[in-house]
Length: 86
Image (cartoon, rainbow, N blue to C red):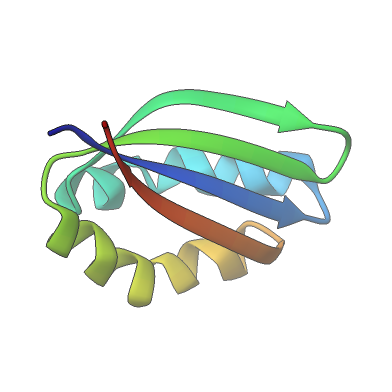
């Protein structure tokens, strides 16, 4: 089975969000997350589809280190869905 993560980020400033998102690439990589696609919805939301190599490491990142990214990227809310191919 393949595991992917669908994430929604709400933010107040797209430029700050994108700068923090790009700067966080190495940390996401260490957490086994690879970006497959990024979509922007309106002025304040982004959706990101990640490939997940190690779900446990990805969950640990989401529970901890992701908070720093969110604070730097003007993120006001987020939602994460860990999905497996059926």
